Image (cartoon, rainbow, N blue to C red; front, side, top):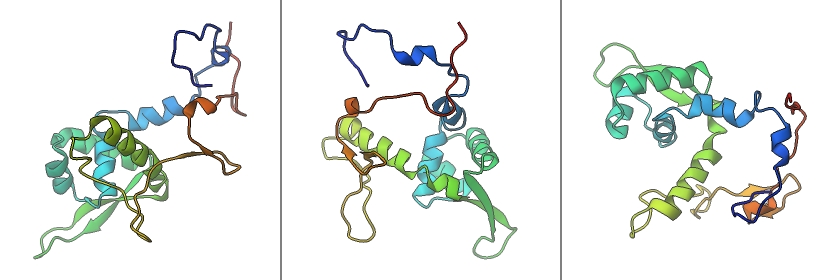
Length: 168
């Protein structure tokens, strides 16, 4: 159960389990470096070429180069050759893999949170919309039985099949 107040005094059950194989920590080793989510934002928005990503994101070239290489290494992005208009040597652009596309709900959740807490008074500069009907799209918690979970406090962590007891 998610708790956020001083009234919670019992020790969390999670303390009995190791975090050595934590899936959140593993994902953040790939996604948590400065600028990585911004790179993914650009590619999800259709900005795929290095110079365009660099110019639009404002990331330093070396940082961008490192982040792109890491995302390719982890099969989140793939390199696709293209030839610029007017000829010239072949270059590379970056496309999402199936694994990368699975990150869209993560970006949608970050966008929703940012819109609620950091958008200007005029509203967020970007909205996500369903191509089929044009309605806004939002990230949502839904259990496998199909129930929408409106309050995060209704979600309880529990040991999964990969859980390991912590050594005392």
